[in-house]
Each structure stands twice: as C-alpha cells, then as structure tokens.
Image (cartoon, rainbow, N blue to C red; front, side, top):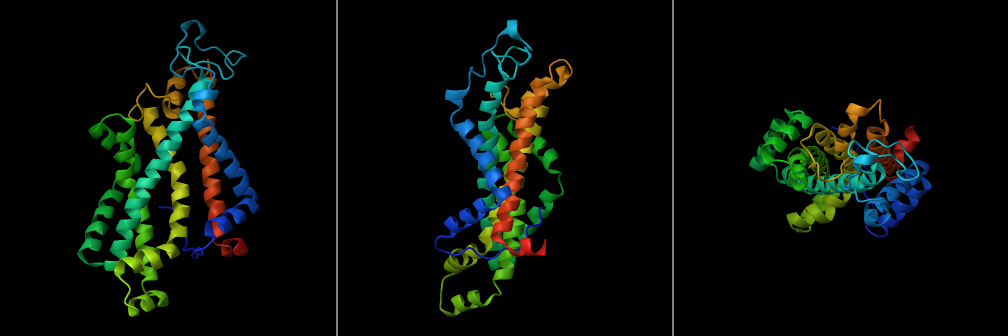
Length: 293
C-alpha cells in the first residue's frame, strides 16, 4: 500500500483555487498537468484528429514502417498505429478515472463509518480487507475476469472489487485519528448529528490524503488494465487498447518495433505524468514535506 502521510485540511473557501495556484507554481506539477491535459485532449478529440478509423484494415500495408501515410506505421493487419494509439487513450483514461471513482467512494464511506462507529461493522470490513489482501492484485483481477467474462465494465468491476481496500484503510486510519481531536468533541458537545460530524467536520480534514492516494492510483489502474489486456483477459480485441496493442506486437518486435513501442511509450509517459502530479500535489498540500527535503 502507498504510504500517504496525514495532510493538513484544505480551507473551505477558495480551497481548489488556492491549491491550483500552488500546483501551477510547482514545476513538476505544471509539466505533469500539461502532459495529462494533452492526453485528455487527444481522448476527447479522437474522432476528429485520428487520421484513420482504428478498425480499418489494409493487408497490402501490413507492418508498414512509419511514413507520411502512416506516421507511426501499421500493425500486423494493416491498421494505423497512430489512430489506434489515440483511441486507446480513451480506454486507459476511462478505466483509471472510473475505477478510482468507484473505489474511492466505496473505500471512503466504509472506512469513515468503520473508524467512527467501530463495533461489528468495523470488525466485518476489517476481516474482509484482510481476506482480499491475501490475493495478489493481478491474480485476483485475472480470476474475476475469468468469472465475469471480457468486457469494459466487467474490467472496471474486477479492478474495483479489490481496489477499494487501500482507500478504506487510509480513510479508517485517518478517521480514527480525527475522532479524538478537540473539534470533533466540540461538535458532539454542540449536539451535531453523526453524519454532520463525519461529512462536515472529519471529511474535509482527511480529504487531502484521499485525493493524493486517488491521483496516484489512477496510473496504477491503467497499468493493471494494460496488463490484463496484454494477457488477453481485459478489453475485448475489437476495442483499441494499449495493452492489447503491445501484446500484438511482441511477436514482431524485431521486425516491426513500432507496433509495441508506440503504445508502450504512450502508456509510460501518461502513467509517469500522473504519478509525478500526485507527488507534486502531496507536496503542495503539505509544505512540511518540502521543508524536510
């Protein structure tokens, strides 16, 4: 599990604007954010900027090297690598964002309720997380895909069924630490409801840590999706995905290096940018890290 330190709470008003300004002043954060925005733009504009349909085949141009007609070459059945790489951006971003959204929501709610109320519910979820942690993530995901079958949403659920565990553990630990703070005791003394204390008082104080972890996990889920697609149990072959593209090119790697290299580099750059953005965001939210370095 990623060790994310406890971060100070973000102020209620103009918090996002303040964080964005500080992030843009961070060189690493600025460059990473620009790279990610380029990928997002490619994903949104894929139907308009891709030179070819990603499913179009041309056997007369199979394994064609990079040229003016095909900037990144073609694959084993003549499909344009550039077009498929651009469309594959959509798959990776959607898998990363949707999986992080589902796992963050589930883990945050379970962790906050377990850490605040304790009792049988906390014991039950704690035992469930221990059971899930006994399985390596990739092996667990392969087993779930074998059970659910191939498909985009089946992949999302297969990754989410174990992905919430880290968010749960972080949210539970942070909630346990916050329940002993003076502001929580003051809220209880004023007669505030449990839900108001959880979501109005505790959540703003633990949200920065959750945000950093969520940002870092987007890239991790992208790599998992690519790994499953590489093994043939992830995204269906009819949908252009970077993992399946890398798998298709491994048998012709020395003959046509571009088939695997182009989508591999695209995945590498995007995941690296997301991870660097997460680290920059953690530094922005907790200036003490910069002071200690």
